[in-house]
Length: 174
Ligand code: HEC
Image 1 (cartoon, protein in one colour):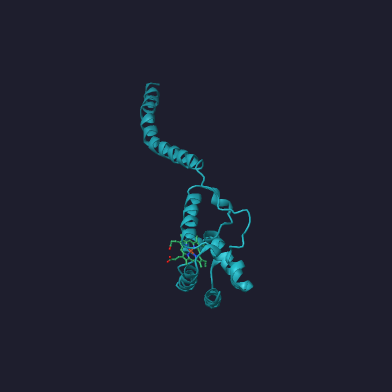
Image 2 (cartoon, helix red, strand yellow):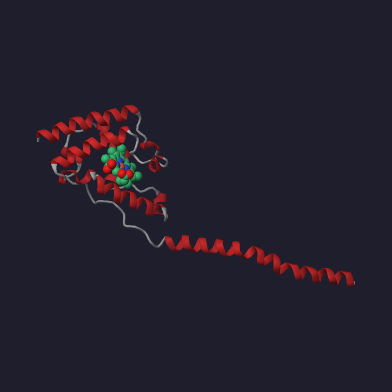
């Protein structure tokens, strides 16, 4: 009887120590979840224009359907006024990362505002488009990881470069 009592007592003594050992992890987990929840309240504005205008590059220069399709699929999410948002794009911090890429991408090149660029700027951008595509710099790696349809094969790249040349001639002769 005495022995039993002692056993019980020793259990009571050790239990709080075990609980204390687990506590930091519980606190860290709760804090992380709380931060993730709070982050969701800070959603960046979406990049969705109501309608394409005649400033869009495809109103401005000739382009065959396949090249057009490839540019829209591989570039327009970051280089136009209309991004297609997948479901996970609503989740911070993914939404923040996307908003930054779109902002920076549009600062360098915005296909939707093509008509507003000076002729010289258009010619420079057309050269750059061929360069970044050929070198595999664009579309960005982090993007093709999630969008396999945006991966350009060697033929697609050649077609885009052939188009940048004909488009440059068109811009030049205008
Ligand atoms: C996930 C977003 C994203 C996609 C998709 C994307 N870009 Fe970009 N692009 C950016 C960002 C961000 C920058 C600016 C920062 C940098 O140079 O890396 C940029 C820069 C550029 C530049 C300027 C490069 C320079 O050296 O100044 C060109 C040209 C370009 N992109 C073309 C394209 C083309 C063409 C496609 C499609 C084949 C494409 N991009 C797809 C985000 C993107």
